[in-house]
Length: 115
Length: 113
Image (spheres, rainbow over the protein chains, first blue to last red):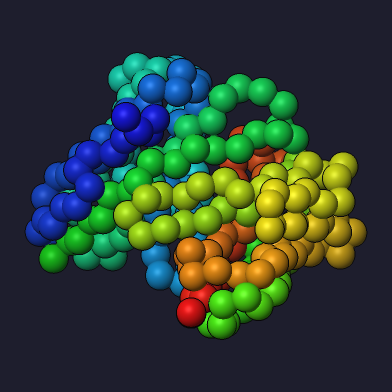
């Protein structure tokens, strides 16, 4: 089984709809992240959580909200989806530890299309 | 604000060639620099991580170098194979953004038989 899973893997929705993307991990990591990827722009950080009670905005949090339901679960919500939120969304995790060796483990991504 | 740039945006080479992917970053105060591989439908996989105190890391046919003072890193792939075809992403963990990665735009590599 994959260590970091994302559901759904693909979603097509309409403008104005509320959408939730879910991420679960079995790695036992404290830290979790949500990124979006647009063609030609690399990955950009939306929200991150260093533990269940510590949630922070990333570079592009407007229009998004998150919930850390447990150490293993981190959900991303689009309260009212708009077409420019069409993108590939990734969840990632990392363990606590020295910054110099800190890397992240990514889920397979969710392709979201907003019509 | 840290900015990461990758050149070229795309690269197509015949099998067997040695190749170099480039990454530059604007703020040299970093914890580490990482190279990831992205395959369609499979997320990102970490290839190499270079700590700020290191100059290079090697894994099999891959070698990554880091020059913090000039804000540059290169990923060298020796004897390329069709299975190396993927998008390669460079990411930096800045000293002012502990735990957060700043990514470059990626290089799309195609190795043809």
